[in-house]
Each structure stands twice: as structure tokens, then as C-alpha cells.
Image 1 (cartoon, rainbow, N blue to C red):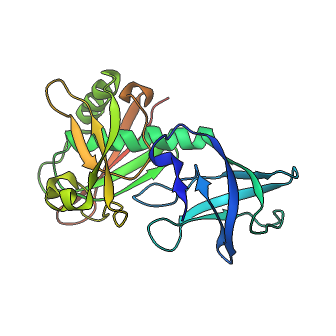
Image 2 (cartoon, rainbow, N blue to C red):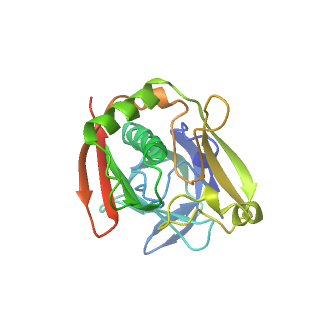
Length: 240
């Protein structure tokens, strides 16, 4: 069982950790700041600096067995590890922060394009959402302007928890049809983007996000693609 520190504080860049398990996939620790691939967001990169001074470069982070397992994947040629080894886990913060900014931006995009989300991907410097829509294709420049206006308004972004049962009784909190929110631990995290009199956005999400939309910075809708009879893909990227 691993304690996921990023769920309560996405701005943590490192933590002291102890290796609890090792197999052919990688190693697990008692706590971690590393986000594993899931929900359209890629896993963190970084390093594990051992007490001896040796460094294990981490080339990927993936989900392990069960809802409370995370596998840190060591890069080839890294120092050998043993169960019980102690050290400090350090994420590639600059990359993580870009992913946090883009993930939050995709939440705003889902507000402006009010159709069911059929898929999505957060990437370093860019991202996309697929929408179940046919004829209501948004104008690229208009959508860019609206998206940047929401970003510049600097809405607060917060997280809170509800039970699995509460989520099941409120299916509207799940926007993405293709990706189910992380369940199985008895509670599910909601991400809320504050509005004036009601939330601008409120949905179940296990990813990492910034604290204010202004932190995202300027973006551009770079392409809107036809991906089927009713599927439209909106691609965005950082503009600066």
C-alpha cells in the first residue's frame, strides 16, 4: 500500500520514501509524489536519490496491483535497489507543472464545449478532448478567445472528496465517457473550478491541477478534427 501525496498536494516536488516491493516492472515505496499514468495524464518522470548518494532515474510511473499501488519504473543502467532502501523521490517538476496547467485547461475546455467527452489526452505542452457532437462544431478562434478569458479570470481550483456511493448517485459528476474516475478506496476526489454563484466546473478527477486558472497561461486551439460521424477532436497547446 502506497500513500499518494500528490492527491492532497500536487505542488509537492519530493518526499522521503522507503522501498517496499520490487519486481520486473519496477519498485514501490511507502509514500510517493509520483503520479502514475491514468485518466489521460502521463506518469511522472524523475529520480530516487538513495541515502548512499546513488541515483535511480525514473523513466515512467504506472499503476500497480489494486487501487493503492504505484510502480516507479527505473531507467536502464540505474543503481540496483533492495527492499528497505531509503532515499528521496524527486519528480521532474517543470514537466509536471506543465501537465498540471494543461490538465486544468482541459477542464475549462469541457465547460466551453458542453457535449459528452469521449476521450482525451494530456501531453507536455499540448492536450486534446474528443466530444460526442455532430453539427455544432465550434469556431477555432472564438473558442481560443473564450478559453483565454476563463484562464485570465483566475478562477480558484480546489479539490474535495465524496464517497463512492455519492458518486454513483450523481452520474453527472463524470464527464468523460471513456475514462472512469479512480474508485475502490471508498472515496473519490472532485475537482471544482469556482464560479460567481455556482461552480464553473465540478467533476470527478484523479489527476493533478493548478490552484488558479491564471497559472495556466495563454493557450490556443490549434486544430479541430473530424474523428467520425459524431466525434470531434479539439486540440489545444500553450501559446507562450
